[in-house]
Structure formats: structure tokens, C-alpha cells
Length: 289
Image 1 (cartoon, one colour):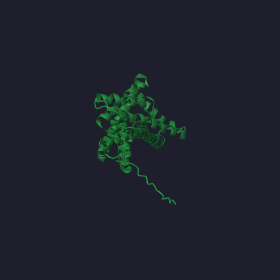
Image 2: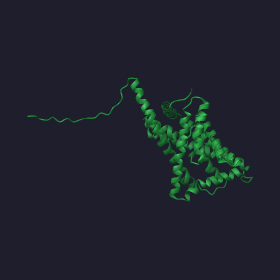
Image 3: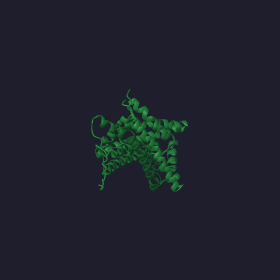
Image 4: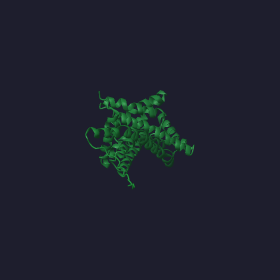
């Protein structure tokens, strides 16, 4: 049996955070670029399957392949870090400045990777612009406009919708990261990580790194989307939603329900003192006659 109990999974998340903070800036960028590009590969695979079969659910079932590659290679995905690094912060092993720097570097790497793959894909699918857009390219254009202009058409409510879909998305994505730590075997990691990613993609929730490919690719293919539309109507609210989802629904519950309790029990078993709050009590002397 290679199953890790939830308390061990939480401990693995904290250790993963330690490992991430030990990476150099160059490593963070390189691994972030690879992750952004690989998620682009997974997205075009899913869209290809959707076009060929007419069933979006088939594409959703295939998309997790890219996430599994990222997990098995130990690459850097900012949406996963949105849950892992806050665990380290809650345990007071990293300060907010160092945490933010790590997240920003991975975010930048993911963005570069997404745009890089978008550029290569658009060149390959249009033969350097010599061929008309095929069904997949047309679908990317349609999705890019829906993810930006579609939200903009509803004003603030549309932005709130994008933010909420970002929360729901990363609740599942970070659950995929967590379940990837529930096994020590490659097969176990693949099967455990697949399910939550299938759930988020199949329901059309918003993933910041996927959108780093989809929306730029749509723009390159002729979508009526501006740079401001991309960032103000999708990328920023979705990224914020992903951050909230990772912290609120994964990092905090797992830290307080599993890791913190386990850490306290471990100290008791080893005979270490448990810190307690010191309460000062003022005692007034009373005069008795």
C-alpha cells in the first residue's frame, strides 16, 4: 500500500513548500515556463478531442494529462503554489515578501510559457498564415471572446463571475496537487491527480494559467479582444479567484485540521513542551479586621 494519510499529505505539502522556496530564481522561471507551455498542450488536446468527437466531456477527460506531466516532473505551477506556499506561511516558516517573490516569478514563467506555446501553435495551425483557420482555431477564438467580452458584457457581475469561477477552479486544482501527494507511486499519483482536474475542466471553471495560453492564442488568431480586455476582464479577477480558492479551501483547512494537530501530537509524543499562553492575574490583597 502506497497511500499516505491526510496528516502525512499535509506534512508533504509543507515540505514541498520548503523545497519550492529553496529553488533559485532561474529554476522557478524555467520550471514555470515549462508548466505554462505544457498546460497549453493539454488545452489544445482537449479542444481537438472536443471538435473531433463533438463531446466536450471527452476533452475534459483528456486535459488532466498535462497536469499529471507537471506533477510527475516536479515543475512549477502558480495555481498549485497558491495552496502549498500559504501552508508554509501559516507555519511561520516564510515571510510574506519571500512568498510573494516566489509566486510572482512562477506566474511570470507560466505566462511566458503560455504565450510561447500560443505563438508556436498559431504558426503551426495556420501554416504561417497561409491557411484559413480550422475548426480548432475558430473554437479558440470563440472561447477567448467568451472569456473576456462575455464577462465584460455583464459589467461588475461578469467580473465577479470570473472571480468566482477562479475560486471553484483552484479549489479542485489544488485538490489535485494534494491528491498527487497521497501516493508514492507514479500510477497512484496519476490516478489521484486526474479526477479533480477533470472535474474543474469539465465544468468550464477559470484557470489563470490555461488562460495565459487560450486568450493570447485567440488574439493571435483574430479574436476581437484587446490587451486590456484580457487582463481586466479575465486574467486579474481569475488569478485573484485562484489565489483565494487555493488558500481558503485547501491550504487553511488542511493546515488547521491535519498539519497543526499532527505537529502538536508529535511534540507531545517526543516529550517536548507545548507552548501555552501566559495569563497574568492581578490578585488584590484584602484587609480583614
